[in-house]
Length: 77
Image (cartoon, rainbow, N blue to C red; front, side, top):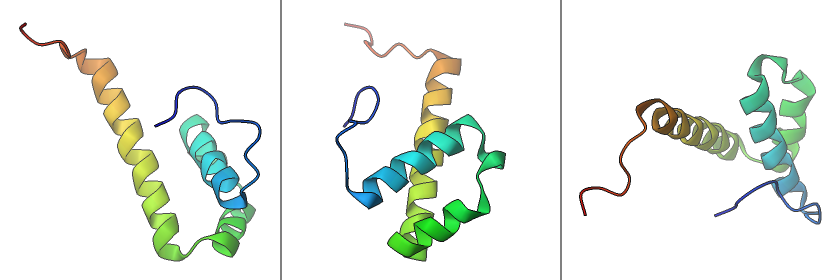
């Protein structure tokens, strides 16, 4: 689990690309340049790219749900 921005010391290409995709998808998914997908395909299989996109969307949706619903996470204690 990560809190805050990714470390600036990450040099693993796959991690840099995955976090870059997440940032782009969450800020403006329509502006992701087609070349990004080519770069992703050079480092990830199609199945891995699908999984990355699913995870990004899933966690973004869960975060949105939590913000909108403001659930009582403490419960009745």
